[in-house]
Image (cartoon, rainbow, N blue to C red; front, top):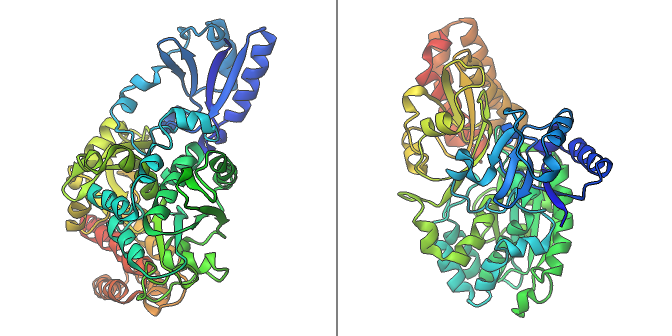
Length: 513
């Protein structure tokens, strides 16, 4: 039996030389006369170790990381092709990856297969527990499926945290001969990459969750809307659809249920606003991505005017596990009304950046110190922004706050998509507040005045405050402007932009002096 080596083909790993490493190792094994099979997987999420090279041994997969082509000679000399450890370079020796403290401490649910298998290997997907959810779902009627999702406590992972079961029930109850399932994979928030890691590492889990949603609400057609900045993910999804057909996960007779489900992959055009569900629908229908008035809600009148379920990638990815193991198993994880796990994504000034799937309730301090290892610069962490560019800036005094939708709301923040961007004590929060306003001005669809004009005026007001011009008067004006945007904007882009601005003013007032 040939030696098996595992190298990610995730975009993050490829960006630091994974393709070159795989090619060089293949060539080196041939030169050595060794039988070597290189399997390209998704990422484990331990991004500071990329490229992570894993070798299959009797005890499990032994890892080295970060590895470059320059490390190959010493790895071979130490017995790489014999499955030996690498005693020459402690920098790269990771040990058994499954036993790595920062991997073992996670609760892998949606990301259980990421990094384990070739993402387009249907047999490997099934061998690692794939299709268990859909097999359970085809034995239920739609009402029973919706009840499982409702009882699990699953909430939308795209930002608002709306209960998934309620949304599905609304679409199920709607009268229509055609309904749709739409996946929002337009992951545009700063510091977020969970959707990409799952799409590139285990796309069949996403497809399985969407098909289950279709069975639940009576929809026979689905769309995945993926951002144009994810070309690797787009290509992976196109291939995954073909694999899903072979597995009978898609087609006219899903898993022998007598019900059909077809799926199309659509590439976005680079607009942040299309992460908002109604703008996404406009774009899917071939028009400019611009906000729709609500009501009617998409669950009543969505894509092409039909009842539509719109959920985020991570919401759909959680569904197969819920159906396979039962709602109670999922709801036992987490705290309060925040059930299950969250894909925490650490970025910015952090020593160990990456993705960690953890139950709700873990504190920011634990994430930053125990998982992130503190700042990359070695300086004290002064602030974190949770929930993307519209999330609040939290100071060190709030680092013991648990990841919980309601707890974050109490402090005028939001969990959002689970992205955490870290700043050390050299950050200027007045400049960051200005960035939030400028981001809104650039990305606004322009439909409503509070967002379109308010954000532009907000940048001007913040420039005057930073310059020290009529500071007190402009602070009053900025507060009034934030209230207008919050209360008058049609969607969350304008409505949430005041969050980072006001949090910076509240917790870091000295930066505005």
